[in-house]
Length: 129
Image 1 (cartoon, helix red, strand yellow):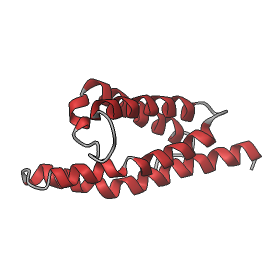
Image 2 (cartoon, one colour; image 1 turned 45 degrees about the horizontal axis):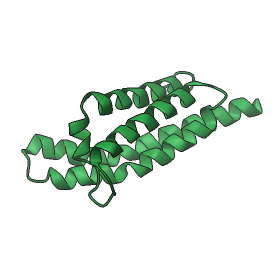
Image 3 (cartoon, rainbow, N blue to C red; image 1 turned 90 degrees about the vertical axis):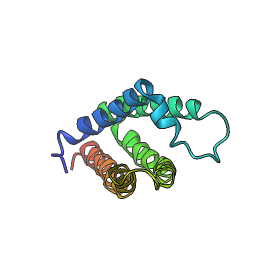
Image 4 (cartoon, rainbow, N blue to C red; image 1 turned 30 degrees about the horizontal axis):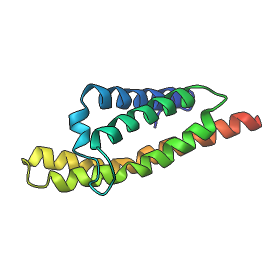
């Protein structure tokens, strides 16, 4: 886990990087949008990018860090179905791709915990403890 002082900025960078990736290569993400969601997968891909940019900016600012980090944890939980969709869709792909898709699933847990830790550190900074 990154140090407490660098952690929020690294999390913000991860979110911003993900947002850039969603706009730079939307087709890769369109295929992970669960089919049960209404509307165009591209709309969901771009909406996810916008949310990631907003969360990144809000996590980077000390004044909004705590609620943004909690929202980031919720976002990481919310996008988990896309990771499941990818694992299901890629089950017949070559072994390295299939392994990557399956390997993404448990990675959501440390991301959620990281965001919660950033929120907790921000709360302690606000309390002066």
